[in-house]
Length: 221
Image (tube, rainbow, N blue to C red; front, side, top):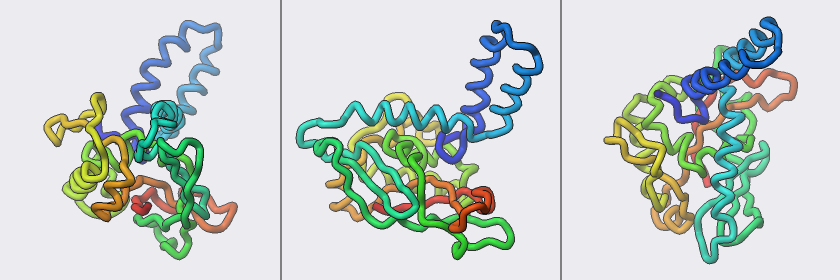
């Protein structure tokens, strides 16, 4: 429905609200409170990201401690460093300097205002959505520049560094092929292709709203 569930959660948030409302109506909450809940959720099209991140982490943790596995089990950034964990190496983190996201900015802002990439939402790409499912969400390219064909290209590249196709997350424009899943660090070394990450661009100065810059796309490893 046009979401890749990292940068675009419009459909997912709406579907979540559709499931939630009947249960809200069965409660003893007054109408005003129910309305406030609905308005709070519908007022943030990225609301579903709060749920999908937790689901992705739960999925990714299932491969932890697979003996000799070279699959990435986690990625996260803190505005200074990016860290990855490898399934076969347990809870050990490997870190490097965080990359700078690329994207379009609101008037008056540029990449000089941007902070190095940050956040835990890259667990989305680890689980086979986000940047890896860009072909499912061509509307995102209007935030980063490019064309819908670029979105398809990003997803196709990710098949080169992953070990499987997702059995549930299907991409209509690619004949319902599953999204690329299972980032293999050996394939990254062999191909030189690095993961594409959908991300938000935060201002480098505290106190300036994060929406001072649009969401963008970055790739590094």
